[in-house]
Amino acid sequence: MVRQWTSVNKQATVPGSPEKKKRKRKTPSTEAGTSTLHAALQAREDGKKAHLRAPRTTESYTGHVRRACEWLQHSLEDHVADEETASEMASCHSVKDFYNDPSSKDAFERIPNGRSSEALSLYLAWRGFREKVSQSTIEGIRAAFKWHWDSAGDAFRGEWRYNEMRRCWEGNPVRSGDMDDLMAAVKHKIKAEGTPRMHSATMKMEYMVMMLTWAKSKCPFDIAFQYIGLAMAGLEVPPPGEVLSAETHSVITRHLEQLAFHSTAWTLWTRNGELLKLRREDLIFESASAVDAVLAKYLDGKERSLTTDERWTSFWVHLRNRKGWQKKMDKGMREIDLQINQYRLYPRPDTPSCDAFLWLALWIKWVERMHLGRPMAGTDFMFPTVAPNGVLHPGQPLSHETVQKLLNEATAGAGVQGKFSTHCFRRGRAQYCFMLAPKP
Image 1: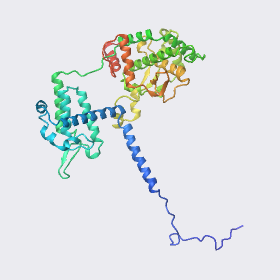
Image 2 (image 1 turned 135 degrees about the vertical axis):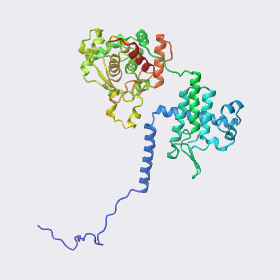
Image 3 (image 1 turned 120 degrees about the vertical axis):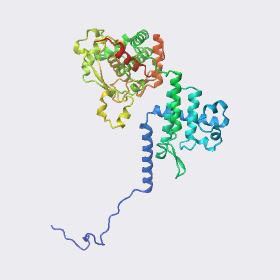
Image 4 (image 1 turned 180 degrees about the vertical axis):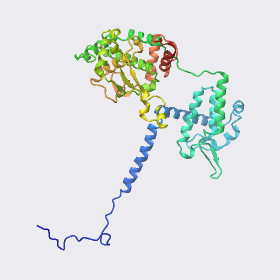
């Protein structure tokens, strides 16, 4: 049946006729728009804070700025500088004018003023020439203030200068001629006095052997090997506290994590901070069964009888957080070009103290079987925090302080002399490869 249109039906209108009503476009309310804008601004600031620089770098810079502000306020409260200080700082214009200028107290604020460059040069002169801090400390303070004033806005980036038309200072006070002269003077002073820069001692191969020997005297690794062997064979492993005491379980966990960390750091030439960020997804096993077969020989004490094919068994480690990778990306390098940070680890039964293949594989098995009761997730940290009660937290990496404590404990227990810190494994491996490794 054809539908009959009546007078009550809606009449068609000619396009563009005045009778046609235009549909109003919905617009967000003012309140919603303000909320969205606020969220966007907050997201921008949070993103810059989280990803522009590493958290430890931001923490270090903040500390430098805070200490400088405390020094400035203390100096201004005293108000009078002694003659010796004045003579040392003669290149910084008139010290008397600086102390009498009311704007000097705000020299280190986020928005710099005409006294900011002079105040920073006075502070660096005091730290460098009177307190005789290292060149790296002076450079760290300078970098901290550059970051401090750069974050104040685009007007405070670039060369420090006075704008005659606007009658105000512009740029970053760190980038002034006075600062350049002072930094050059500090470098010349260090070279003239022959002041040594504080470097970490080298973690030599023999030190690694000594630390493994000490660890074996403190930790029942044979028990750990038996438990891992049972788990790999598919047999039931009793939970910690039944057959294996909680104390022994904690000791094994501590030493296995320590050996896995130290051997991997030595093999891959890493700084300690780079390795702390390693996650389970960064280890790629092309043939997990082949790795398990080689590990089974280690557990049976037959690692010396590995065949040629077994010695070529390996797995990949992707060290995503190598120092400087962000700068390379900022310069236009693609992620695919950073594959130089991927490494194969092979069995090294001839050097058990540095056998990262063994200790990493053992550590993964121990964590999965004796702590988590499940395979490690991709986002789990390879070197997670273990609480005093023995509970492992896979989403929380070891702190720098804990790594240093473990390193100090191992070197002291093994009787190794020297001060070892973040670069010790990197320097030790490089020295071994280029100077001491056996010739093929």
